[in-house]
Structures are given as C-alpha cells and as structure tokens.
Image 1 (cartoon, rainbow, N blue to C red):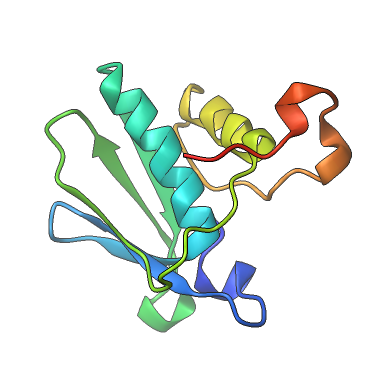
Image 2 (tube, helix red, strand yellow):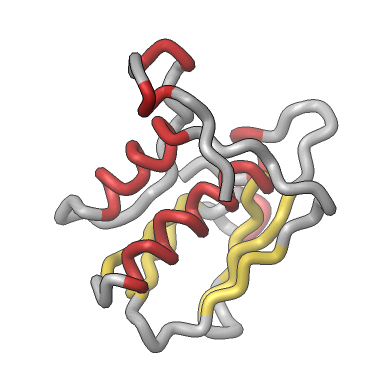
Length: 125
C-alpha cells in the first residue's frame, strides 16, 4: 500500500484512515479520497471486502488487513481543507483490486494517458 512516505510530494497533505477506532494508517489525502470513493461504493452495494496496507517502518513494518463490511466504523480524516482532484482511472484501478480475491490495496495512479475517451476525464464528487 502506498502510505505517507511512499506518495508524499511537496505540499501534499497526509490524512488518516481509521478502522473501528483501532488500526489506522497515514495516507496522502488524494489517495485517501480515492480509497474512500471505492469503499463507499462497495459498502452501498452491501459488498464486504478485505483492505490491506503496508505498515510504516516507524511502527514496526509488516502489513495489516481489516475486513470491511456495511457495519464497519470507518473514519477518513483529511489533513487538507480542499478536496483533491479525482481520477476516474485511479478509482477504477482501485475498484478492480477491491473486487479481486486479495481485496483492496492501494495501487499507483495510472498515467494520464492510460485510458482514452470519457473514462480518462477527471470526475468530481
């Protein structure tokens, strides 16, 4: 999973994903927004899934997997005050992992030219 140190760019804000008041991970705000979109869509459909992230070395490394279901208490805490731009291609790539046997995990954002046509255009929520 791409966490704070993996995607941090100059002037990027780092938010947090918190599961059931326990496990949490720092994720760059733009990546966190894309994860939120995918998770919200799956939960609206009543589709439970696993979500895995790689832990930062500062907390011992390794990885954590949580089971996300419609009754889960999820918190998406964004550090920045502005909503980041949304990439349809990235959202679709994340949804693909969420629908796989391994479950949702953060993948790199596809290049802008990875898709052509309407699916490549940014969307807003």
